Length: 499
Image (cartoon, rainbow, N blue to C red):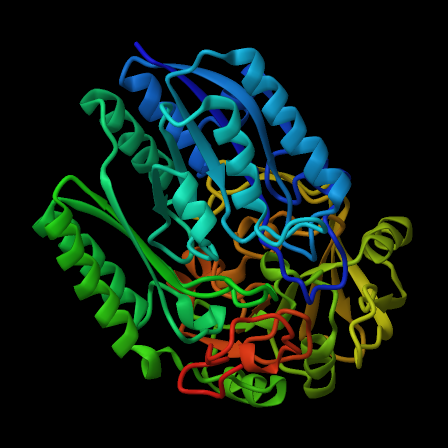
């Protein structure tokens, strides 16, 4: 029986987002469990679609003992504050020192963390872990599909495995696969050969969805190459919202046969390089999307609109009003937008009371340029305390705590409703609507504050999905960001201009 230290530190950093992640953001979790320590980690994540949960299950099933360090996650945002990084990383390292000796380390990381002090948050954390355990102890890591894998991360970890689905329905499975690589290293008493490759173009996150091309075929190819060559390949399309030199797409691979690994990496890498033009994705203005949705959506088969540029899962705060304003102006029937993250308005709805009507000033809290609050009269249709369990593939078994919630219906556009929530979290589970009495599949139009994760639960009920380009900080076209620090020659969109 081996003794394995486990920990996690998850943050996806949009350096163009309006607000940073402080320590309180990790305490609340923003849809994820709050920060936990030591022996509390395994029971806190147990049963949820979280990498650490899958890793713990795999390690325990193999007969190994796990020693908890720290596990923390926060909603995507601007940089992790220096205080939060040092408090969480410092606690992890202190607990690791006390846990010595250990036979291995498993870390549940994101791969796109930028802190106020470190461009490569994961690389810095891995360096500190390696300094404690030394070169002889293997370190295995699970990463998010949107990881910006750096050379430092690759050098310091002995094995990394990355999600293969977006929506990320395989998070727990990925943790288990990363743990499996660690178990294999311990059994063999040696590290596998490893390989790394980066690419020369960025892609917008809506086009990285594994349910559509080209990622659907690229991930199928990765799995086929694993079987054919006896390797473990991972493809990270990257998080194209972090302004530092190593932002971008990459692949990593591990295998016992160096030549077989090289062949597999070449075939997958060449396929990704040749798929550049296929990453282009049609984007709709709010007005064009609503016109099409009004013509195609129907109860039982709604048209789903993704308000991608205000995605809380990519650094938005879920409070922009461009799409909502268009809905109120065009007055479609059977249309609901959610979740608009507006604590003050949610609390006001509770004060106004169910069935009553009042003037509301909705959204536009975080100061995104060109976005104003929506001021109009709404009737409070229903209220909720925001405490419920996710049932969809992405948030499965997450105990969500959204704070006070409400469903409002417009007085002037009675076919339009908006779901308010207090805690920042992207709209990726139908329970977020059902909690306030709205069944999404009975609507004609459902607008969600998400880029892709919503597809896991909403696409099966949708006639079609339209990606909407409404103002917000999580730009769908990477070329529109004001980049200053990327590496020279990197194309800012598929077949687009180079930095």
